[in-house]
Structures are given as structure tokens and as C-alpha cells.
Image (cartoon, rainbow, N blue to C red; front, top):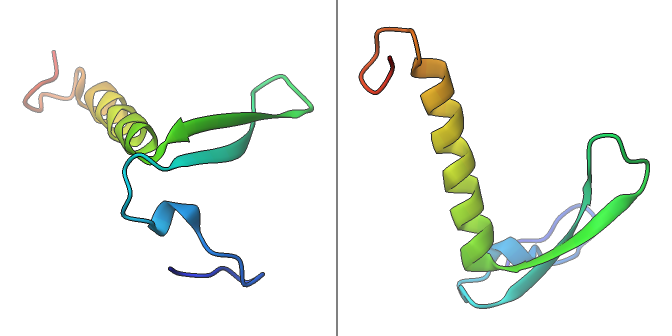
Length: 68
């Protein structure tokens, strides 16, 4: 596993898609971070979905395929 500057293993480097990974996320409008736990598979799926939404938003009205 890869380690960061604090010599702590990065949980996203694991190959087990069912490993539960918890991250602290700071939500917009909130001063306190919220702990969010999901499987590695769900974190990856969430990242892919976010990229697709961003790409679609950028293509809308641009004349690119998939845009209106």
C-alpha cells in the first residue's frame, strides 16, 4: 500500500472493493466535517458519476456530442 507524508497507509489503494472506507467531508455551509463511510466500490462509483455529470454539463450547448 502507498503511504502519505504521515506514513499512514492510504485506504483507497486497497484492491478489496467491499472494504469500508470512512472519510471526513466538509459540507458546504457547515463548519463541522461529517464522517461518511462507504465501500470502496461505492466511492469509485460516486467519482465516476460525478465526472459524468461534469462532462455532460460542459458539453450542453457546446455543440459536442451528448450536448444540446
